[in-house]
Amino acid sequence: MGSIHQKKYEEFAFILDFRINSRSSLIKGRDGTIIQGIGLDNLTLLEILGSPEESFTISEKIGIGKDGRSKVVSVLGKLLYSNLTSDSINSLPEILETIVRNNETFYVNYFNDSQALTPRLHFLEVIPGIGKTLLSQILKERDINRFSSFSDLQERIHIRDPSKLIARRLFDELSCSTKLNVFIRK
Image (cartoon, rainbow, N blue to C red; front, side):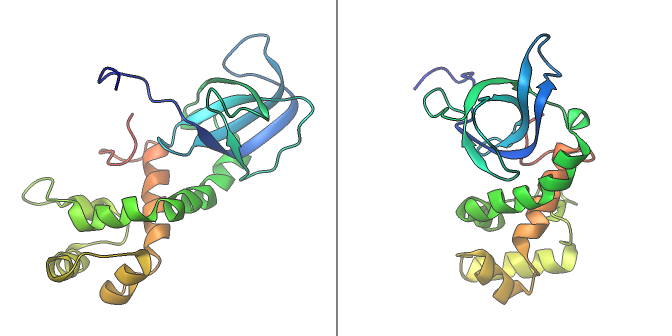
């Protein structure tokens, strides 16, 4: 293990949008297939230079790590939400849902393990659609038995599509419309 402050690099990203024969918004003089993507592990918004002989599709998962870059020339840098194209913003909610579903255990454990943030606010209440009533149901149920999956959560709490609700929270955090970030480091 390295130091605590070691940079965490993304190994994979999902393509939000791409433009062939385009210019980097981050690095002067970098032209080509410019991809806007979101990292799989840390949900970092990235600008990526795609390989000129490759073709790409929106929501495609591509390798961007030091070793697995078959379709990518380089990762140009981090983007802010405000740098995203409208096509990127439009494809973001669906891709976030895919990421949440692919990491189901992590997000189900958020329901199992999160605690009160302050005496008046619980970490679960930052998820859209979870108010005091649902919160008390969740806390009661998880004391009896931990949740094992999204469908378990849905059946026992009658929460509709928890992966969509979490994806909505991730979107809000990425778009900087939250005071407190739970999942995404600023």
